[in-house]
Length: 317
Length: 233
Image 1 (cartoon, each protein chain N blue to C red):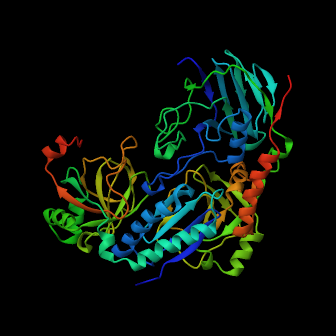
Image 2 (image 1 turned 45 degrees about the vertical axis):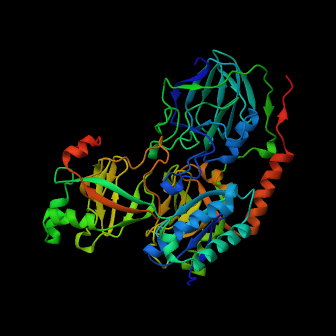
Image 3 (image 1 turned 90 degrees about the vertical axis):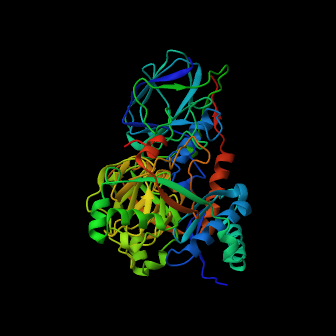
């Protein structure tokens, strides 16, 4: 196939991701998918793609690709310098791309994950209905073996005839410049094994992101919380679950988490806030805030409403 | 009639059902039955189910349903369960036999297990085959099924230092659990043989020969049969 983007440099860590691999946790498969779901969604929105279309998740930066196809391209998420044919180009908007164009991503000034989308998404062979790359499982991605993008990789995509270019309203763009996040938490799981004092301590303390943070989970460091129970029978872990190993330092489990685990958990971070956490780099700071299920449900509805009432703006050229 | 199941919040779009404090055949059967019922009750609003030793995590789509509705579905499933007889539920479990080439060359820890247990290698192999195991959970890696309970005579703790590389198909024991490694990976279980059957094939349907709640037996095969099945030492 001749319509593609060719990887000249893969950068630090670039993975093909669609919205994730669902319904297979009972055979041990994790979900994968974009860590920052909101930025991923915006990238596809700006390329007029279905929400599940495959994008490239670029961690930190350094990706360079060359196009052989006429398409539109968008980069959202981390504040990464973007250049098209050596000219600076804006994030959070779609750009017209022609055969021979060179697209270069620099390194993040703030935030950690950027999403590069093209019209129609990238094409790859799905496994369990998803192309999401999970390196630990050796599943998904361009070669269906869980490998990250590498130099010379050919990313097939469809050419398009007409291009409409769009820009995301400021309101919907995230700002990662503070390298800090306030994460809303629904209490659950073994929360009763944590004393009131421990819960107060957890919600009043500031935690920082350690370098041992990746797509499986973010390991934090701060006030030590040691639950009354050491371990539990291994049980299913949902996205955002906050577990406390015996050292008392919390780990927030993310998209590539193990499907089961045996550490006590105090609850789970609201999935709308997972992206904020995953955009933090080592040293970034985190505060937790308890919310009720009712509040969580209204926040979901509000988030959907915001997308519906602030559609992307058409750029007149 | 028993009703000691409890339902807890796991996350904003997830509930976890606890069926008891420790794993048992009865609980495992209840979980497998609940999985089937919830698939029907929740349909497209269900995102995933994660059955484990004594719990079931239910993950749903928060845009098409809510905690209240899912809780009602779970309660209905549990109520059905408590009214059904155990015999009916057991009949839904599949029985699977997995071939194993037991030997010192395919199971480097056999001799040590035998020494510790004061048994011969032949006795260890025989005891491993005598039990019908239940699939309590699948996790750790794609297709890794936790089978229990291993006869206490051959139960062996994990290695102090895990091996860097355990081959695909390795049949192993850790405490009272046994498993077949679905792919080459690091691992700390005691190796007693090799199974030539693929435990996980992403391109096959179903991609695993076993599911949670199934009953598994191991059957010894000789080296030639192992190789004829495509096994590689």
